Image (cartoon, rainbow, N blue to C red; front, side, top):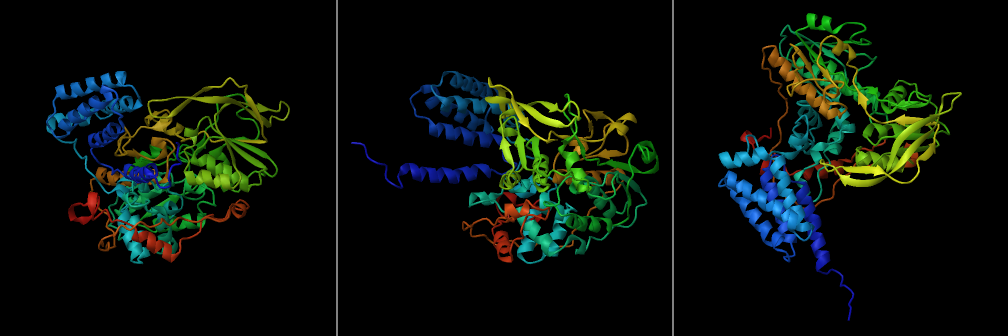
Length: 610
């Protein structure tokens, strides 16, 4: 007789274990040996084997033993060849996906980490510099001492927390509001419950101690050197801050009336209030000898050649403020606009009246989400976002959810075909979209699509926003010999521009459109390398003492989230949408920190994570 499964049976208990195991997988620390990781994944395949077919049952075990031999430093080139041959045999002869996927996993590792295999075979160890590090510090592009400033918050020293942040990042307020917080991605707190709300704690700190009220570090004596910085965005401002602290004279050439770059002209007020951004900027401008030349465009008001002749070094931190248009008919029709241009118009008080209009938006990145939510606030009757595939939604999940809550509608599996405009007025009337179906994954694990047999889809709209990327204005620099490839300045990892003496560059104009924290990291690296280029080796000291680390009992505790205003309220205005953490929330959240800078994988010489 059939019986109903009992509540709390074996499968349910295994599911609980697997949920906890998933957290362990996502919190693998950065810097670990990749071959150790692959052996762990191979072990999962071995455990999943049903044992019916020999290639899977015995073959995966033999591959595991060969990999173990390599990890122990006892492997040879012959060991590597045996492992590859066995994996190819298993992948071609196993009965089911367990064996095939397990074998292909190791085969892919032979290509992805060939240098790692070679190092283990030749030297019996990992390649140089492969070691476990403090996850949050490592994954922050600017390498901010996250455990340090969280410890300061726990002690109630909010100004000290801001000082610790500013030791690596002079824009603590801006990042507290808009950073994508990659530092949380591998937080070891996942082993217990959930990652720390690092951005939330940073926001709590700057809400208690405004950046322009916190004392700046002591400035070095003047060196007599002058550095020109092109662009007053996050990258340029960061470089200016550190160079000024080192004692150099800094002159910023800013095209707009105010500093901030895309932080001011690309991120809407409801996400980053500009009076809060100004707190960071004021603190930077009061650091050392910094002069700003506003409304000054290189190539129009002064040439790049003049900069090189007048300054000891030049830093190009241009950003990517020009929105892309599609190379198609009617791309310049009325009411068709790139998302970046649309946001800058709103920031400059030239917002269009979208009352009662149907808005279509192509793209799924953060800029697209900002544009969609801004269109809602400008009175649009409806806002529809279209993407070709789900992978195209690269915006933060919180931004996508926020847009949905505010009434933005999302459609996927529709590729953009063309724009239809009124032949008399040249105003956009509709967009044509081709239905797609999902196909195979590419080499990067991303979905591909194919045209569906369904007919093209006509979507009527009054306003079309193109969230299809941005670019930097590098035409003048390219014309005078700065190396540029596909619209990006060619600079190495030290931010030195190739084949151009004394010129450095970083941020979006080098990498393409990226995040504020990546631009800040580039500005920091550039500043220190410019200092070295000028013949110095200055260090910036932080006037704060990190509290001692106390043992954490690792009791599972809920994560404190940043609450937001009601969607029906926030969609009616541009007021900041987030609510502040309470004191109790901040203290409990700070208390969840495991202090990896002192315990576990992050123990470093002197007790501090680098």
